[in-house]
Length: 117
Image (cartoon, rainbow, N blue to C red; front, top):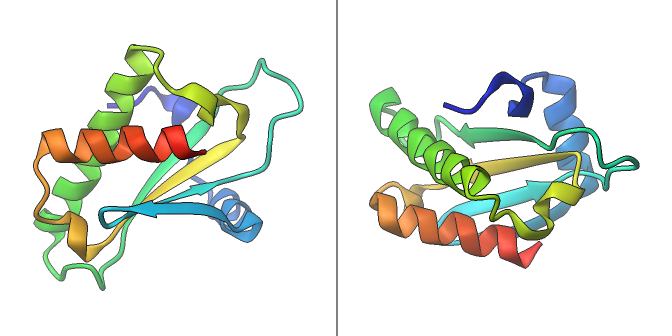
């Protein structure tokens, strides 16, 4: 699980990140990046979203969120986040094409999305 300081929780923070319209997409996962940081001391906050339109079963939606969250957590632990630490917030949105991915594929997708920023 991600530590509390890295979690994006407020609806207003999600909306502010979406408003920037800085996004990239790969393998059924879309990454939205917020505004650039003014000071490097603050942590980048991350949110993970899977819509009910993606799959009607909560078990499937939560599994996809867990895969994305764990992939990001391992990259954070390895300090392998490239340029993504320059942004205030990141949102990973899982789509229906990502439902059938295993952990190795999801980890590769998350890493590639972060490198693209």
